[in-house]
Length: 216
Image (cartoon, rainbow, N blue to C red):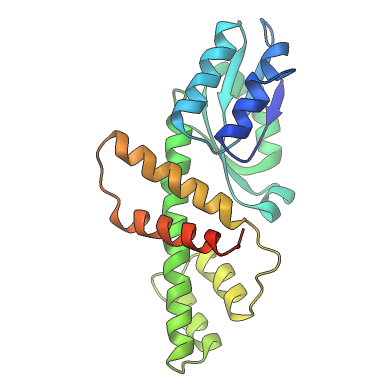
């Protein structure tokens, strides 16, 4: 079994289809599990290439950043070959606190992008709320305390709100360009089914604008 997790569709294509890539070692009796967050088209192409060569394939994108990964606390979304899922379950269990099997290839990627889209929009809303609170003279510590007791409380609000309050921006758990990449992929996916995403599209443009100012 070979596992991989890379940053974006381009990196995955290079890893799989490039010179001395994953496909060079794929054949009957071999299995490939990719844990990257990419688009449905890319993960489908990888699946078809692996299975055409007689290998087994599982997509398994993760929810969680660096610290949950180090602590084995990721959420893992898997789809593809069910027998491979069963065979590698102990490995997935070691990396995550819970693993879901979602059916055919593409389903896990769709789920991950939907969740990433929501996380991005929540993060943007939280940042604007904290900024407004500061500029109108509210105590940010008190704002965050009340937020964490309110219906909008969640781990993202608690951890990112605390980081904003303390201006801890130098060592982010997830880089801006990766958050924006996930938003972009979600917005692109929505175009394929003609589903408007007014808020997510606006947040994607916001993140792009911040990137253009040199933040990564």
